[in-house]
Figure (cartoon, rainbow, N blue to C red):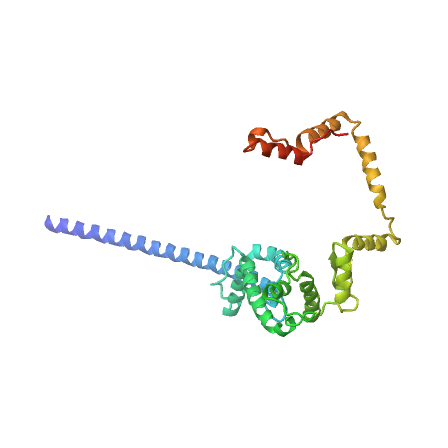
Length: 311
């Protein structure tokens, strides 16, 4: 009986071992097949990415070349227009590659570096521009030191020099009377002519009054550079476009014309009501006597306002 029992146990263990062996073998086979399938899929994906980036590398290199050109001190100031224009041109390319992996698809180290640099330039373009321009202004002030030491026989200060070499799309320079605005303007014209070889027809000087425009014309010694008032500039554009000089509105006609239009407009009751409210409530806002420390101040206020009836 014991022999039969032992035999049955041994047989059972053998069967279990054999079934486990078959199951494990099948499991390893399926695992291997899955691994091979995944490997094939990864290879297909890698190859697609590889081919994709290879097709984009020329565009990426051109974009890098255009951007790095603006990071050359010899070229000049890196303007807002230039960085905005570059980003607008590269937006589609950046959007195509921004979410695509590139570091482990068998590209060369140089190609990986180019892709990484392009993505960095696009995302941080303004930071690169700002840092470059700080360095540019510093170097430019050093290189043009002697140049700025003699503008109309005057040695420009650091603020004037910085205003000149900061060749941004638009610069607002706040300066008071007698601070050297005209001298700085003349220095700017001389600078862009020397630094960027700007021709006279690329330089437009606009001033508010005939006197200041004439002063600029007399002091700038560059043939072909002309200073104009806003009105003269506008008049010249109209004449060039229309092929004839525009008629000029006589100043003596201005007051009668305003009176004529005003008399026509007040025939409208709605407009008349608004005009009346303006004259009574807003032209000379009334303060009560309680807003003054004493009666004398209140009386003086009334005298100063010259409250009279309106015709």
